[in-house]
Image 1 (cartoon, rainbow, N blue to C red):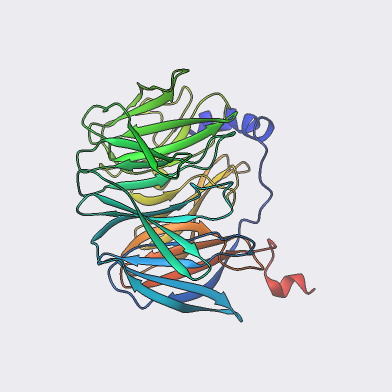
Image 2: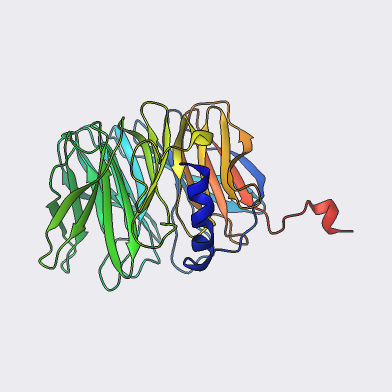
Amino acid sequence: MPTWALILLWPLMQTLVDPIILSTRWDPGETIKTGLDNLVAAVVCRTLNAPGGPLIAVDSTGQVAELAFSDGRWEVQRTFSTDVQVTAVCVGATRGRGENWDLFLGTASGRIIALSRTMVGWSSQDVAVLKGPILSLQTTRAVSEMRASLFVIDGDSLITEFVIGFEGKWLSGKLPRIEGGATRVCLHYAKNRLRVSAAGAAGVVYRIDVDSTGIWRPQPWAHLAAGPIDMAPSEDPTSRDIALFYSGTDGIFRYLFYGRTADDISRLPVADATYLLIGAGEMRRINEFFAMSGNEFCLFEFEPGLEEWIEVPIAPIRKPVVSVSFGQGRGERDFQFYVASVDGTVAEFVRSSSELPEEENKE
């Protein structure tokens, strides 16, 4: 994206979207050992009436490790096997008001499993069986009075939405197939409304809205030169449309939003060759996103003084990284990042409560 476009839009970003007042600094937490190999992901599950939630790690063989933060350190509480080959993992609140989150596993066979944390352990429920392998799982937050949904991309690159009915059974509906099939999905929220963005190998990003009859209707939104390695939702700086960060298979990074969907003007060279993007969430500020860049876990921030995006390395991660996510694992501090590596370790980062180092604060 040209710098001049961001310069013109920066005042709108400040006036039309309420910024989150958070520190830009992240302090190293613990290097957590899960005891697992070949990790698929590590995520935090929120729990009822608890200030923090357990950290859950899942490997490709279906082994699950539950860790808790206590007395200043992370410890493995229990490990169990689901006896499935796991290809995708996510967490979300699909039951009730969202106090408790479930863990969802997508498998090579196409089976989708929901794991729920109870007072005595974990219980499991089969959601469905689709064409395997499951490529992606993603849950929404509850919008208005609706329950949260689970969106799944199956082995045929089709998107299916699942929601729990009043009798506790999973109900499903397929979204229309997009050109070339979907490999990535983004979820956006505005005015108690959910909007889905989807893209695949063809490089076309579709905006998918649901009409008054409950039917999803896709419309081409951006035409790019390559399909996505990863996508992440953001805030539209103009507050008029969806926005997303897009890491292309050609190694080129794009920032797409209203009126800036053409391939040439959406490019953001400072973030080329990034992946595992975090672009939205209650723990990020409006003018930042996060990604792996080579072996560095980085913050990317729009700096109004310099009038451009800058890359701020947070820490090197030498092992291959499989997932990055926000979480609320520590009870006393809400803002953490968890960067999981394939070797079973998870690097934790805690958002600083101050812009100044601790030594300077004492002066």
